[in-house]
Length: 98
Image (cartoon, rainbow, N blue to C red; front, top):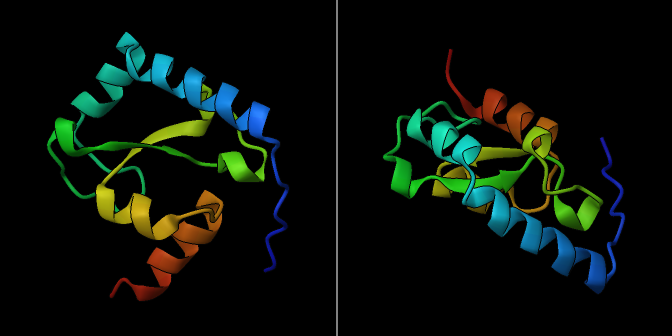
């Protein structure tokens, strides 16, 4: 499946990054990372090692909202890059032995 890149303008990207920083300070985010689990691979990860990932990447028009941000281990977050979450999950499923 081809994933269209919907470029966000610099002002929108800066605004969404500011919102993400605020969201990281919220009790909601602290509760999410407190579970200590990557939303993609399910690996148990210390809360301070989890990163915030945008399910729909900002560069593809995603927003910094509770519904679009999940805790991810550093490996998943770095490898997912600008893919939508569905594409990353499909990739993980394809490489994970059953």
